[in-house]
Image 1 (spheres, one colour):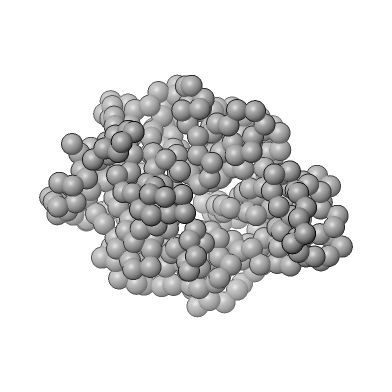
Image 2: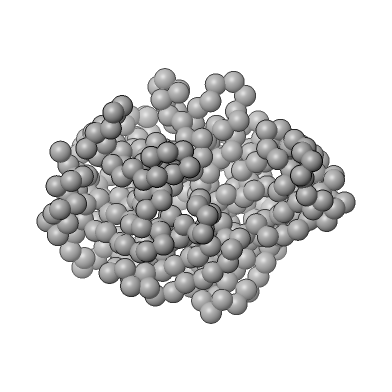
Length: 362
């Protein structure tokens, strides 16, 4: 399928340079999540009425995802469904923003539901004022939630941010301090990364003490998403570039927290060829490549350390949105054939014949 301005589906695939596996994505505004092979063929589909906004696979093959919420792009449920789409577990909170599954089976959840004191609100710098500004800004919480819904621990961002240095972007309203948009737990669960979008800041937090052990971003990134831990101790993230001074462009950067230096980056050539104002992400693959989601454009692509594109796919699913018909994708993930979630699964494209005839590899 093609749109009036560019092709969709598989665009390119260099089998000698790409990391072989299966890519998971879900179209924004839809009720389905899809797993595709390297050739762009659909090999599995999850369907859940009410919407699958963004999900990832657990080792047991279940899909953990946010729904679309009552007013997209919000989301108020986390749901876990099995390989066949049957509900296994769910948790509801109207202020839910992001989530992560911890090694102990609990869930780490990001909420925007703190009401900061009026005095602290007045001391926070930045943003633009309006007559409707609240007397008390909202702050972010990171909460550990047990499977039965019990809140085990709560981290309050306002207790650890500095009103004079953690400054709100001048193009953002003063109704929240931080507006955290992403949360990632470390592999052992001892710390987490939180992305404060309107502060242009990523913070690493020690879960035992609650202290911020590393904070970085202002002047280097703008309205970022998806900070993740790498095996070498560095942090990978998508620098969206929204509200960047000068030319708007996105890039992916790898940062060394010990020095706060960028040691690798990818940006489009020309720079404006890669830009997503909101959403998106980046995943470092086992072969050293990076899978990038250009969310607003529904474009998923894999680049080598030398910035060569070796796999590229554009979502063919266009659904109604507040911006008209769009094929946006919040974030994609690649899973190798040896991933535990895929063991014993039938991934024959023939099982989704009609879907592949409509949208599969041309």
